[in-house]
Length: 259
Image (tube, rainbow, N blue to C red):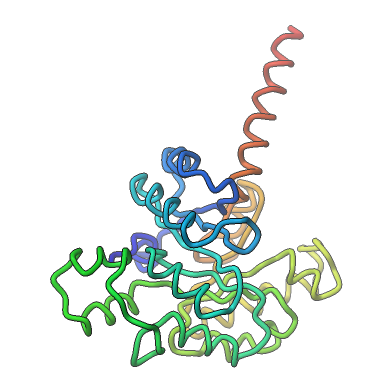
């Protein structure tokens, strides 16, 4: 029931992760040899469902990575199954209201914070990982599971202070592409309006004592993000890392051949 990523964050460390779109346990194992701290299994933009996510989580755990998941939608089943198979945290996309976030809290957190259904599952070794009562398991899972609504709509931005203040919300994840699109400035992350929106989300989270995660596509973006005050950074997607890594090696080989 431990969450290495949350422990790093509580110590003030600077964890770096990436999204997983390849849906390959072998790829996850390889990522575990790179120095990354966590991965987000993407059940929104990839074909992955709970069965696949479970295998990817197992590979992450064996490789020393903390596995979070981005849920496919806001349904109880989509939330509950990912947590039951072992996700140490959830990214929840397409949020439009405070009420939606409260519903997600009810699905993802046990009483007294939410109304999550209880069953011995892979999350706690089917009840054999630790000698705990049901009440103790519920308390430990509430404390260790990260719940991060994604701020990527104009409505979520408008209510961000209320969202991060909710008990059960551990932080917020900024979706820079969709939020910039929602603001009518697609991909213009340095535009004053977009930059101000990002800053508003980050400051609201920190004022409430919550975390703020951010996505970038570059190594320099990771450094810049931590310098700006984000708590954890996502660097690209495994598919893009693969393409860019191989592309760089091919270009280097061709350049060497010209000498």
